[in-house]
View 1 (cartoon, helix red, strand yellow):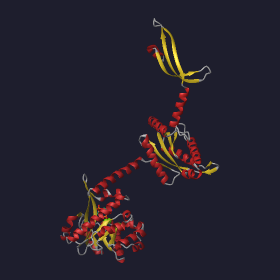
View 2: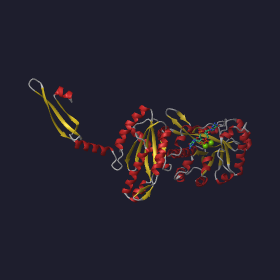
View 3: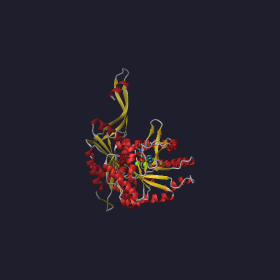
Length: 492
Ligand code: C2E
Ligand code: MG
Ligand code: MG
């Protein structure tokens, strides 16, 4: 002020002044310096007005803008501000900040049955309880409705947050009296922790919100801490699923067929359709590179339907060119148990009315079939009416009891390759394979040995009474157009 008066001979601004009574007040003041003809300072002239009422009003506006009217705690706007500061402080102090997103459990019924006033009382009480549980530097804010956010600052390790979260859960779930009635609510809390989750305020809040949903889903009145690593994996999977869908829509999948032969006659009896992904950058990918990503998603079903449709069309084409063989497709439990599985399959089969009944086979993992035996049994029954037969894949890896096996109307047991591989030197595996063959014959089921890699395996399986087999020693899975020529050569 003095500098301005010296240089520019005037100053204008706001100052805090004091009245004679000692009361401090705000004034807006303009001061001019008055000089005589010799440029000697004569006096200052000041004009001022009392702007205390404006200051009070400003403070009120800022309060309304930054605080929640009902509970008096910070609102979303102030929270954003505090989070920015807190992130800076947390980085400086090398401590942790926990962003806790709280949503009350059981609030809506109170609001609905006891009225909004009662609901408001609950919110005020909860806000008070949360505030009392937190430390001085922490922030509690209300986002609206029954949603609150607590910022826990200066935490040295995760355990410290956990202790506070547990205290929060306990205080919130204590009974309270509202309109002279006892009322209880609890909270589901989602937590993101900075800097483990190294993100901006908005993202931290969103992650805490996501974690809150998990807390709700896992039974309420609990907290869940957001895991960036898990989330990254989920996002990766999501991204990869998009690529797989794109591949499906752009015909990048193809089926290769592995011959299934009668071990005695050496004749081709069928083929197993095995999916391959002709990846534009990575070449041909086996199912182990991508199928587990689609497990239990819609894509699992779509791929299964594509496989079935493609195999049926292929079978029909082979049949027309004189190669009438059985084709099996691998179907997941999720797909098998999905909506309208049977009807959709029927429609696919009806496209080829001339195809011979009983030529399509579905392979399901033994472990899947055992999971929900009654459901699977019914589905298998309905499929048989359509002429679709079933094989239990990777047989021996599950725990089929004899009674289960007698319940499942499957035609074929495919002996898992892990047992077949070792029959030459491992007595135990040989006994298992022998057991499965005997079991199948007692129940009048076929056996297919998977993974026949050498002539010795083949010979031994034949002696053990196994009818059918597949394996690299007979033929590797091949593109559809190679199968007719292969079936005519008996080079193996
Ligand atoms: P699976 O149904 O038991 O199929 C047999 C797998 O063993 C195939 O692997 C086949 O290439 C391989 N194999 C055949 N003979 C031999 C052998 O002598 N030695 C060895 N070491 N392996 C042999 P692939 O094609 O990589 O498929 C692996 C699994 O992926 C399949 O096991 C099946 O469970 C699944 N799968 C394949 N295609 C599909 C499909 O279209 N849909 C679904 N849902 N699953 C599929
Ligand atoms: Mg199979
Ligand atoms: Mg198998």
